[in-house]
Length: 136
Image 1 (tube, rainbow, N blue to C red):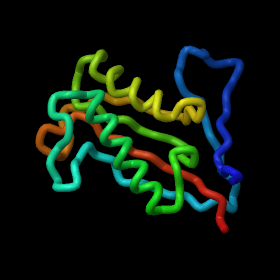
Image 2 (image 1 turned 45 degrees about the horizontal axis):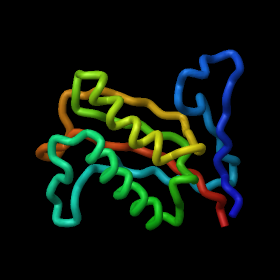
Image 3 (image 1 turned 120 degrees about the horizontal axis):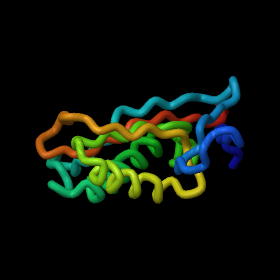
Image 4 (image 1 turned 30 degrees about the horizontal axis):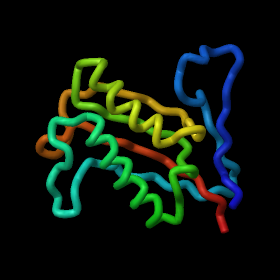
């Protein structure tokens, strides 16, 4: 299936970043704006309490479910914002590594942010995403 997302890289920016610096979708693509994917179990409880990587994995699982409901997959994501409730860089990196690995070669433009608190009890990670799919 053809993808709508094109990742853009630049020879004039550092290659240290583990993501593309920009992405585009054609004018006829349908954009899908996802609510922040939270590490919640089906019963509403927070998964992987105290575990940044575990919560990132659960948030990604929930993001994939929301994408599927919109007719999209992780390969249709055009950008992400990863929110981590911590002021310690190692905690942000623990969550980021799970997200980065999940996206693999489809390394979309991303922002990683440390925040003071997230909305649910014991929540440490939330992942926002936008996807673009061919309009059919």
